[in-house]
Image (tube, rainbow, N blue to C red; front, side, top):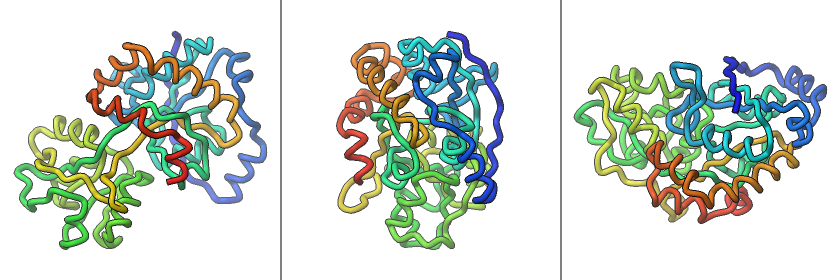
Length: 287
């Protein structure tokens, strides 16, 4: 399959500007992408979910599965684009790309803005802390009980988790992307960074010993249930035809050993793979 990489910086504009862009755009259908033989797919440069490697190749659980699905749909050409995580939904709404392969968590508030495929993955939470964990932090709940500060990526669902746990805004530090997490924690701007366990583990391995994955981490309990996320592909709200086509092929691909191997290659466990079948997008969108 032919792929190419197109860097993209998606900036939030005024409401009027966004409405103007959306008004002039039309729904992206399966017929559209099949006719032109290409599709524009965005990632947020977040390992291991969806990112561009040093050679400009799209990698991650989302992109690798997306490539297989597109091949099954007869779409030979993928233009890969990157955006900050918080710009993915606005980018879909503005038709800057046709699909997102960032394993974005399927959440009710997001379902009101865009469409999701059925889950492709499932994953738990984690904390990036300074070497030796000097503040002895082991859970998201710790930030509601202490004066410690927690860093969160703009647009990430950890914000809603912290709010649900009663963590005040004054203890939350917003960063634009995962790449800033290591320096934010290592320099003490924040005492920890909240992200999925897979993301935190990857960041810790690249920090040169400055940070680590918080040991004995306790999954947050919200509304009586341990937090687990289900990630899927995302589409503009008027691209139901394209979403449905992807869903059909995704369901078949998830029956294969190739799908299991892709997830395992990026650190997902057999348990994570099993969890991905536990809930439907309809259930997740209802909350």
